[in-house]
Image 1 (cartoon, helix red, strand yellow):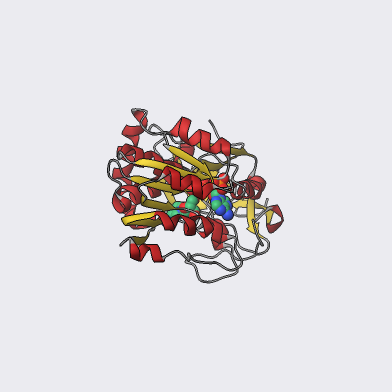
Image 2: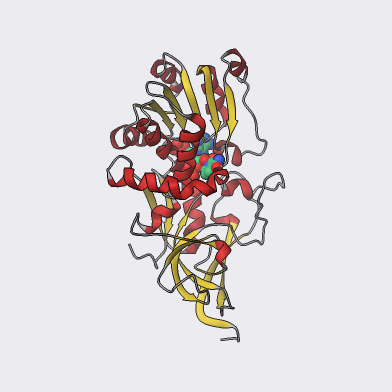
Length: 343
Ligand SMILES: NC(=O)c1ccc[n+]([C@@H]2O[C@H](COP(=O)([O-])OP(=O)(O)OC[C@H]3O[C@@H](n4cnc5c(N)ncnc54)[C@H](OP(=O)(O)O)[C@@H]3O)[C@@H](O)[C@H]2O)c1
């Protein structure tokens, strides 16, 4: 053991090359390293779960257009939920649960700025990465502060069975709206309707998906909640309703595309006096605690569910889980569960 390194082995995930198409295991490499001894003010976190975020594919593109960038040779960005196992910081005690935004690795030496405490009496630790974390908060603020669906209105959500989409649908139901989900399999359609209360779910891989949508929305769409962009958004725009809202939450289909393309059918926004609205959840950071308080009541009352899809393995399994996310395997939030996880 060298000076300044303790006896633990840290598995760390690095980007090996800029991916083409869906990113997979060949695009990443695992390196093993020691864990540095803590300095004053630092905390050592043992990772238990990682959340898999579609946006990682956007930040590993060979492009400086976006806010963050992970280049070949960089540690992959990611947020772990885990436990404090050593502390040199007065505000963090050994045994406390936290989220650590310090990259995909089995142990992280963190400063307070990289940590958020998780109250596991409210929800299990893993939910802090999913429905009770950024995914659920994104849906919450996008629906209640931007889209504001009214009772009886019709909302279309694409990417509906994913981490953000499923929560957005549940919030729309709480608001009294009628909800149509678009997703990529019959199994997911059945799940959306039977388990989460969507009114209609349509498999966008059906040749006649647009005809099914037209039939399901005879009075047009008051809100389009867009997670995927591409052709699905473009076709759906033809059904936007008078003074409707198209909420641009994400563009998953475009993150993997060599050349990103925008919608052709924007003319319908003009005709229908509708608007496209950008959205970034971080604008609402000072309201997260209040949103979580309301969400905790709805969870306790059984009014909302926080669905997760677990991929089990070590840090080395992260690329396979990420590939499965893009293949649409997940119902709800895609999570990587590490051996250190306690439940
Ligand atoms: N604006 C914000 O502040 C904010 C915050 C968080 C996330 N986001 C964005 O929200 C979107 C959803 O994120 P998420 O974490 O909830 O991901 P997710 O929906 O849980 O996972 C991605 C899903 O996208 C679908 N998909 C993959 N490739 C597709 C394609 N080419 N066309 C259509 N669908 C495709 C798959 O489901 P199917 O089986 O249905 O294909 C897959 O399960 C992402 O674009 C993300 O970047 C935005």
